[in-house]
Amino acid sequence: MNENIVWHPTQVDKAQRAQQKNQKPCILWFTGLSGSGKSTVANAVESKLFEANVHSYLLDGDNVRHGINKDLTFSDEDRIENIRRIGEISKLFVDSGLIVLTAFISPFRADRQMVRDLVGDGEFIEVFIDTPIEVCEQRDPKGLYKKARSGEIKQFTGIDSPYEAPERPEIVVKTAELTIEGCADLVLEHLRAKGYLA
Ligand SMILES: Nc1ncnc2c1ncn2[C@@H]1O[C@H](COP(=O)(O)OS(=O)(=O)O)[C@@H](OP(=O)(O)O)[C@H]1O
Ligand SMILES: Nc1ncnc2c1ncn2[C@@H]1O[C@H](COP(=O)(O)OP(=O)(O)O)[C@@H](O)[C@H]1O
Image (spheres, rainbow, N blue to C red):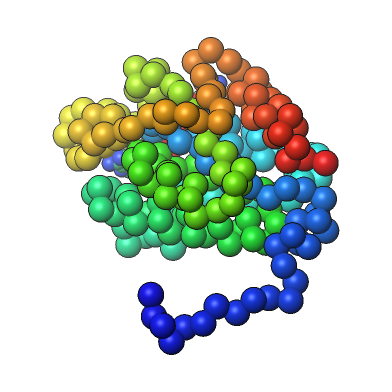
């Protein structure tokens, strides 16, 4: 921390921005294996939020790794830095009054906890996309499991890089048992029940 850098309060604050939008900002943090359904469910949730006039923003792993995080690899160290940056970006979006959706594997518990600790109580909602690896591998929407099994891709999550499942996620979504619509509804129900939506 540089002691010569001083935090500037802003005239319009987070509470006012949230009140103007009539919503309670938060991060819906989707975590799960590659192919588990993070992007699909997060997109379905965002569509429903949009229809309900909720102002949201979806940060998706593949897209962010094309831009701000294009310098990062899939080593443990770079995955940690990936999540740290996404956490900080998400915090800024929450500050701007939005409901933020993030879809990253985010394989390490400690990193997800670090993001939880960055924001206020109730502002981090962990959504575990709980899909067995056999199902993810069967889906293999990008052909990456095939490449990982043949050794063409190294350090692939679930194959030769670890995934630490959440211990107490706010929401568990079993995509192998529900339709995409059903998965999205589960998340929306949680938001309504906990007062995030007007
Ligand atoms: N080695 C390895 N392991 C896991 N995933 C890999 C790898 N190489 C490329 N990909 C593709 O990158 C997407 C995951 O990026 P993330 O930023 O979400 O990963 S992480 O949170 O930093 O672990 C992931 O996207 P999803 O399939 O949407 O999860 C893959 O498409
Ligand atoms: N109930 C479901 N929820 C989410 N995805 C599903 C479901 N059933 C089948 N799928 C399919 O599984 C794949 C999940 O891919 P994707 O959303 O890209 O996963 P991830 O972002 O976790 O890598 C998609 O092809 C999607 O159509």
